[in-house]
Length: 559
Image: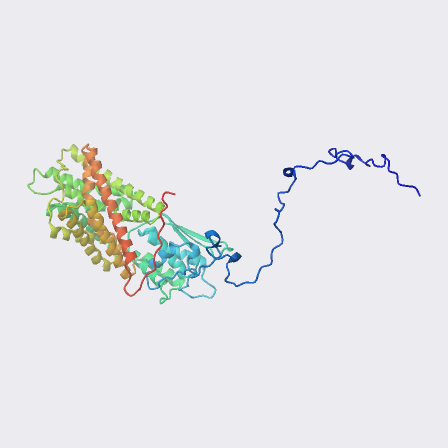
């Protein structure tokens, strides 16, 4: 038997790859590496951690995750899956409350907390035709937005219609000229989105009231309104003619200007001159509209005749023995042109968080106001060149005449309601509301000596409060009960004296008067909005019980 060789040649590696160049020679001990230099993998498990899951102990379905009671372990917040002891609060909406309040409550809630809609109109087991429901919703929203409704009210109406036909996860969006609504049946389905552009806007509160009646019928379980019936009624609303003819609107504009001139101290001659100038301006504006001119130029043309009438009476004053105030003629004409409706809607959108729509509405108001300024300034500058004695020191409304001025305020609101094409059943209420507003303003300013801005804000707040009450009793829009009632509070005289200051090359006095006019206009808008909010927060419809509370936007503190 031959013993195995143990020579050096037998211990040689077979190839060069059999050892590493860093391997210590034979017979030399290997040095130990420092503890920190041991190579580790980033995927290695730390010591003491096992990859095996421990067996889950048996327990109750009501045990907390991990067996940790709420508030234990140093007051750590429990798991999000933890259900409070009293349960998750369920949102309950009072069905007897007006649909406007219920829909505003839902709109101000996160979409994940909204209750599942109960389909009010049940007609088909297959479910509603989603594209048709969205189209109907957009058409209704278009009529409301074109009629001057605020963005929040339009969104509430669109939300009410879509939920009445069983569409959940609907999100309406309203801007100044664009309406859109998106519907996503579930998180795994594709959303359906539709939009509509509002290209024409007109003031017709009779049509607005009819749309609100249709929405009330759609959202009421006692009334069966199919999609076909809703489309038919909507088409009838669109086809209906205005309740008052063109000549009635022209006469109403003259009556409004005449009543406004009496409100600021004018007499019979001033009333007639202001009415004649306003009617002439209205006819010229209609002529420009028929020729396709933009509204800016229509306002410029409409503002010139009343101003020209006041300048003419000033020039004829030395030759005709009459005691009158030509400045009241111009002021009365301005009352018929100031865009109070658009101003209130713009400020309301801003206060409710619709800043894009509010900015667009206020920009429109600014353009209209600039148009009035241009028209009046052209005539006033011509009058100054003709040496007309236009004296801004002759303050308007210097003599307090409670009975005459209250009757003038009621007449002004009545004429304003006709111009807004209101339904005949609302004209009396809004006229009385305007008279109450003027009484409150006169009592605070003339008798109490309170500043005109504060007096205007309080009177406008009562207008908003009463208008919201009237609308809640009728389940209708609040605009027909509010817009015409703020007519006696419009800053016509401050606007006139501001323009006169610029025409007489006195910009300091003109800027001060125009600043006061802006302050009065903002006081009107904020007061109307605040009065409506107070009515919705603290008052309910008789027999409706306690309405659900509305969530308001939290303060961002600048973040």
